[in-house]
Image (cartoon, rainbow, N blue to C red; front, side):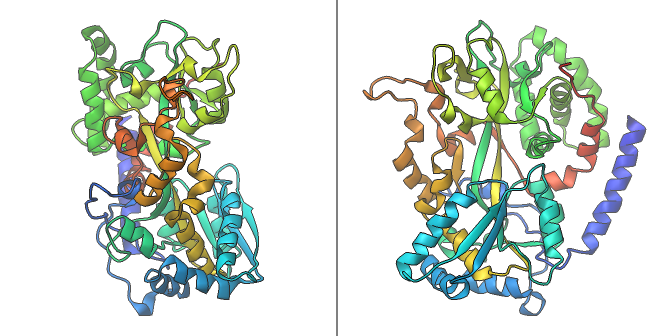
Amino acid sequence: MKKMLALLLAGSMVLSLAACGSTGSGQASAPAAPAASEEAAPAAEAAAPAAEEAAPATEENLTKTQQIIKEAEGMTLEELAQKAIEESNGKMFYGVGNSSRGKSALPLFIEYLKTIDPSYNMEFEWQQPKNNKIFDQLTADSLKETGTFAMTLIQDGNQIESKMVQTGVLDTFIPKDWAEANGTTPEEYKGYLPLQTLNKVFEYNNTGSKVYDNVWDFVAEGEHGLYMDIDSEIVGKNFLYMLTRDDYAAWMKEAFEKLSDDEKAYFQPVITEMEADAQDLMLGPDAAYSLAWIKLWVESYNAQTDDGPICSTLVDASATDQFGLLVYSKLRSVEESASVSVNNINVAAYDDGYEGIGGYGYCHYLFVTDNSPLPWTACAFIAYMTCTTDGFSAWGKDMGGYSSNPKVLAENEEIYHHQTGGMAEDGTTVEFPAKNDRGYEWWTTDGKLVLEDPEYCASVAFTVGSWIEMLSKYSAE
């Protein structure tokens, strides 16, 4: 193992030197965002890569699309709408994304533009590539002088950083109205533009006697949590990367220290074994705790193809003592019956006395393609989704999905009441406690949600990523 880690580190140094030598033809990796105020938007801190300060771009080295973006960042949504009408009236708009709901947002955007100019009309097509092919599709499209896709809604900060931003395929646009809502300006804000943060949380079936009151319980002997395989949904691997960052590793150590002596005795040999690996991977002082948890998790989770089936399994009364790590919003789709109920599960982090992380959060980011055929329209559409409740409405119904705009976040809660989603019609009883979303602020503090940081994920993807690849996965067969 030590020889393999030494080779990994040597390779990592070579790749790091190569990356420092060039940032591609697009915009440079953004430095860390300034400290957020109490009113700062959800996802803003998670969206800002912490790369070293890059030389400021000048007019001479900006691409045509980047020049448009720079001008667009000084405009309100209404001003951008006028530009979009002039550019795309009667034309075809192609978007691509990890979320199919871009297809629902586009007709709302067109209707908004029609309120300004009733004669406006635009055809559109929204594509959602499967099996993580969106990066290949965008890369291939970037080779054209003028691309097919005007913009993208995309997840997986690691690959966005390394494959899309560093190579100049995608450009970040920060709407003026969005920046102002977050107490900053487009010039001051450093990082990607998140549409929203989504959370995946630990849930367990409560029809038996078993209780999961510590994050280490999920990797105890004989446990096999339901989880989308990290090779099919890469944000799941980013979650594991993030656990090795110093602050999150400290959370893992704190949770371990709350275990009973017998429980500690079970995990301690693995932690001790991981100390050398943590040192070889040049991680922080508490990283052995995270590496131990990651090792036990990868070697025990029961790989699933999607979060929907995981939810369907856990809410059935027959799933006694099973648990999973899955998208929180899936609970909204549960149809109650004699054997199926949201009340058959607990959200672990909501239990009194629960210790450790409650899950992880990742973002849907919005970008303009650098060879966009309709850059003004792309900017206007992005501003519409991030600055208006109607624009965000395609995603607004889901608990566990938090707009990055604090104004939109508050307005959306007024509409959908996610934080009282389990309240019965009489307003006095809680019908489904698990559906009472405690909100972004709670999840990122008391709920100890691990937030994806694109730059950190990219920085350890080769070393920690390769280490994870050497682990043996559990096979239910």
